[in-house]
Image 1 (cartoon, rainbow, N blue to C red):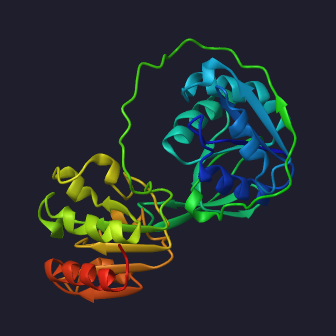
Image 2: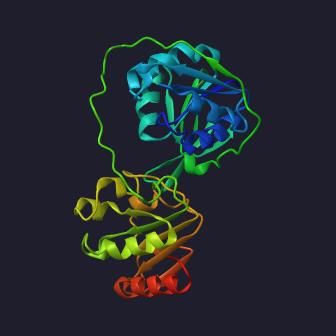
Image 3: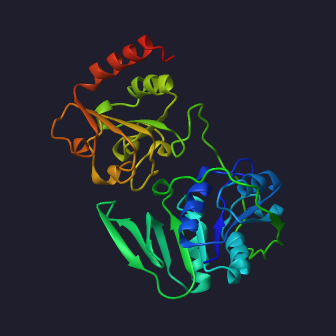
Length: 314
């Protein structure tokens, strides 16, 4: 089954989500081609060509793709779609903007956020904030899939695949890039961090997030938050983890003062190891935690900070 993976990148770096999506595409069959649409994107294409399991890279290098606008990218994918049985993209904000348009133009249903390929044309995906796993069968025809990247291991490096330049697609003229404001942080991005330290309403104020940040800085971790904390204005929206925020699957997830509402658990339940700190022994977060500590976080966090400092985490 020939598949086309839409690469995720910022015109500087190829996102790891692309490698996760290639893994999913390989499970559908071969060959797997990766589409890199960008401006001055040769380095991105070269990085994609080194992913194991990639048979070819298509490079559409044009100022039209300097920013990932859904309309021109969908038009480009549509122009290439006849060659492929499946089109896949990471279930990121970019992928979620582009592929529904592609599916509509192809007049096929999109299957969103797949977490497992059960059989040809049969997929598993979470619904009801991750409380239920739904198995769906696609109708005959092209597959348009967004991939929950935390459910698929990133492919490693392989032999370089050939890179072919393709012409830019038409510009529908339906949107224009105006500007963007990017948050800056010295900490790892939530979606890529191996360790995440997340805080909930139990921290009581945004000022108290400094306690979490000290721990995170010692562990070289990202800082996240529950929706309740974001809604209360303690931290910015880009900290939010959960059904309506970011989905993460780090090696270690430390939940501090988070009760464990199902919407939050949907965004972190695939973490390899979950540690929960909460003074309420009945908090739902302990049902998904590998290690639970029933304690007052205002006592536990300074003790943890001192212990990490003693062990040389600076």
